[in-house]
Length: 116
Length: 116
Image 1: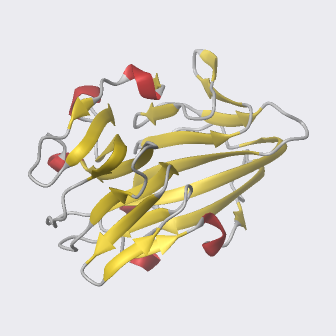
Image 2: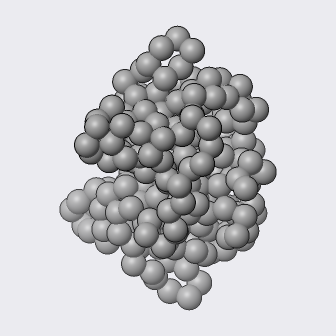
Image 3: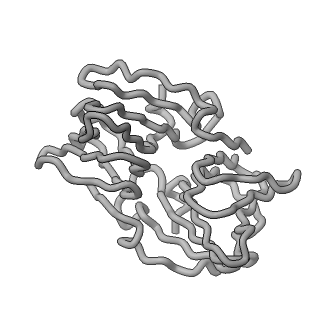
């Protein structure tokens, strides 16, 4: 059994094209021998966002803090802390921090094969 | 894409032997066609707990609220809201609400094959 608080996992800047002011902490991943899925926490500074993209695997997300929207191919959908989102494989999506000054954060889980 | 808040999923009493004052909401599971893993929220009333047991699959957990401990085969380990726990396959575990009066809650993710 492994117990972590968020600060136990290092924050690394997300370097993907289209990402701005985002860092990720891999809470449980390959280094922890997580068998099936990886738990990550994303932190988005003011004005930041993840890439607008899709990929052949799903996300399950919980919004932890901040004023966040998820952009889809049908437009943005508002979110609140505590909301949970299932992004299906190959669905376009982008998580955006709507505040220019306040941080936002969310948990995002992926199949372990896709956690590098 | 599916967006839910916690009250969108019905709470069902956990009927397993050894469970007391616990209910579960399946946020994303087979009914949502979640491909790889299921997201559930457990709510534990005062004095309640999940069974002390093990099973051949992992949990990834985040404590959301309350005064919770996880009991292991080496004894109890204290937890705080925001703590995250990887319970490995076949590890004994039990989540206990240490308060007799206040509720506690946690998210628990499992491989989809084990979400009935």
